[in-house]
Image (cartoon, rainbow, N blue to C red):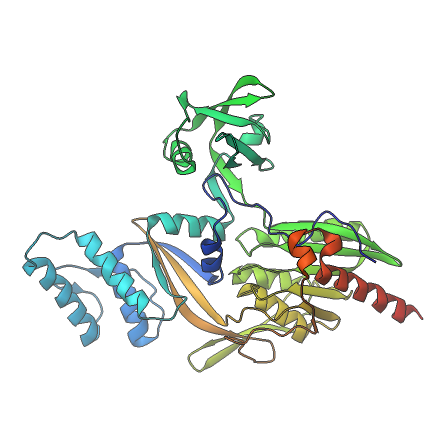
Length: 435
């Protein structure tokens, strides 16, 4: 029997004003597992950090400095000295004037491209989008805007507790002016720039609502991105909780714990955790979520740096024992795979339903640079609690269930065969245990 609900597997529209639907961006997102996010390095310092890290395989604790005349600091390898010499010679001898920043950018980008597919250099614009995604928040007003059939800027969604909501802006309002500037002929990017690059603390939106023109003054502020949704599905002998995790941002654990407590107040006796099409995110957030369920002392996952393997164990007292189903698909990657594998290996009553996952078994570290750009590069492998490396292989579900064409054309809970299979399994499991 198909059960209705509020939270089918549809990737929720968590995008802000500057992010409309972009499939290529979603594919890039699959590459993310972040275990560290540092800031304050400049471009040239990062050249040193990368080369020293690769050459010696050790963590660099302090920012290093480089001067065009000579390197001052600890002794470094011949390869690094050669890099410095080439950099200086190009600046001194190239037949045209060069921008030192652009040359350093190119050097970093070149080094990143020589590493694995998940290591990369991001310019300021891409770094901003990346940081907002993994941080789970951004500076703005908290609205999602599209262009309707009449070429008007339609407000699709207003984030809860956002500056826009507090200012009285509503979904389906038509945005016509920003600070008195008419938006006729402008693009979504133009609208984004008027908001984000204004340098103002407050912005006036002119809106059309039911044919009436309104003005709303909005204060720019921090807007939290929602990465967790929940629902309850009544079964014959109890309630099954449902939690959908869109990504593992810096605030995902807090949202997850809040929703879990709410579900448990509704007396759930089983839980579905949905990480379908979740590209990953902060490894620390995944660890905290797993600690809510696993027994103290159990292995959550393992990390490997060169030949050194460390077991990451649960050190908390919190645990659960009710049945858990993890829903996953071929776009569940990175931290999502860690969560699924941990439940499969370390939780006594867990079942994985869906499709084999993406297969990303490496961990990246991200650094924010002082000029606004960023780098990230692979620093570790991660292994399942039982020591398996799933890179290029993926996590195999206990029950291989595919979505039907009916769901793809009409994505509602009743047509979500993976979700319905999870609910049927939990119901039959409880009925069997009671007989």
